[in-house]
Amino acid sequence: LKSLLKDPSLLVTKALVAGDWVDADDGKTFAVTNPARGDVICTVPDLSRAETARAIKAAEVAMKDWAARTGKERAAVMRKWFELMMANQEDLALILTAEMGKPLAEARGEIAYGASFIEWFGEEAKRIYGETIPGHMRDKRITVLKQPIGVVGSITPWNFPNAMIARKAGPAIAVGCGFVCRPASETPLSALAMGLLGERAGLPKGILSVITSSRASDIGKEFCENHAVRKLTFTGSTEVGRILMRQAAEQVMKCSMELGGNAPFIVFDDADLDAAVEGAMMSKFRNNGQTCVCANRIYVQAGVYDTFAEKLAAAVRKLNVVDGLKDGVTTGPLISADAVEKVEEHIADVVAGGGTIVTGGARHELGGTFFQPTVVTGVTQEMKVATEETFGPVAPLFKFETEAEVIEKANATIFGLASYFYARDIGRITRVQEGLEYGIVGVNTGIISTEVAPFGGVKQSGLGREGSHHGVEDYLELKYICLSI
Ligand code: ADP
Image (cartoon, rainbow, N blue to C red; front, side):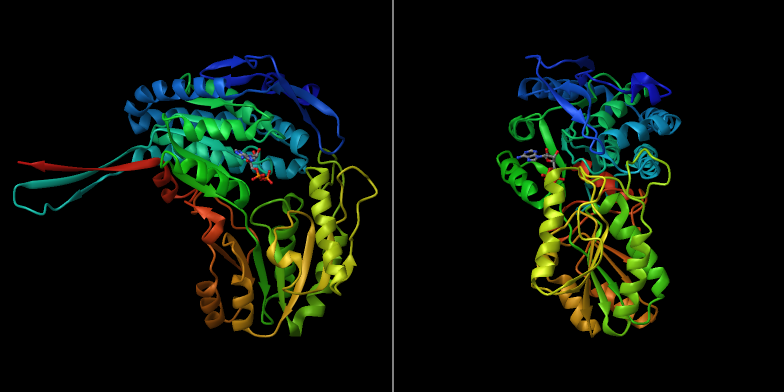
């Protein structure tokens, strides 16, 4: 990998703790592997609670001066950080693909997407406006300040090794917080490279620490038990989110939670079917189905069901499954053997329940964790894919008759992150977008992510929003000041 990089120093194998690049106190390391080939890229320090506590302490100290700077001063550093990420986009993408497996073109897109949050929130740093409220008595004046919440602990997954951290570090650091992140152990290299670029951009020592560790629950406990941490921000499964919220309850810590989804993708009989197929391909097969906003259940109205299934299967057969670094790739490997097993389990369950495999359905001839992109029909609400997130390349097609029926089915889940539908009738579009119990609704589009809009879920998909001007609120506290004159 190093030989492919224009700047080989971006492949960092030490952790960033309190402004220093360090090994673990006890010398432990863990290996980072390339999921496309299974080979070890390098090892990184396996840190524990002690180093995490040091990082938290340093963040607490460093944020005093950082928060006291003007928004414009912080924005200038964030701007530089954004520019460095974009100037090194190709190297960052190579590192990302090597450790995570997504096609290089998608990795480039992720770097630009991640960097956009650093840019956006850097700009927002200048606009952290408080309020003045007309007093409740003649001699009273009321103002409301917005102040940085304090040191933030961050835990993120492997599916977007850059962007998931950038979406949190962007607002936190922009408003003046110290930020300690623990990237997924599968993908620490993208986080370390971002840390290095942050340092080069001029982030003060200690404002950003990157804790590489295979011991996720230890780091989570340090975040939740250390009194200097005022906020926990997490992206991952609802199951782990619940554990962290319970732990965070101990010191009544504020939490942002971006948790699981089970996105419905609805195709009505008045939809532009070709556009719906294109949207479904993007929503379902991007990142090989491994995003929390991927279509998980595709509901197609009875009149267009067979045609849609045929068109979708034809598009799926054109996907090119191969190592993410190769030319012409559209689909890389899955992240792990467990991920492959879950995909197999969901397909087997559909077949056992009377469903049909239209295309794909089995492991790919490339071996390892490669899997054939799959379309299954005859899927019903009783099957596992109806309630569980597949997180893999399986498009399950459910048939429905009426608008009311599909809204009810789409909402019959504990999750409420992203949803999508294709239709043309304006009355229907209005009713359905209002009826879906989701934080995000894509209407006639399969791609909804952007730094300018508030991303987040309702129900058990989480708490808080990332992106847009709303995204800074999660990292601010209100202070009400009552002045008697
Ligand atoms: P995913 O399936 O995307 O890995 P998880 O919710 O299992 O979703 O993991 C998301 C992140 O949370 C990962 O970085 C993982 O290492 C971390 N994690 C898992 N369990 C815990 C825990 N008990 N405490 C803190 N972090 C955890």
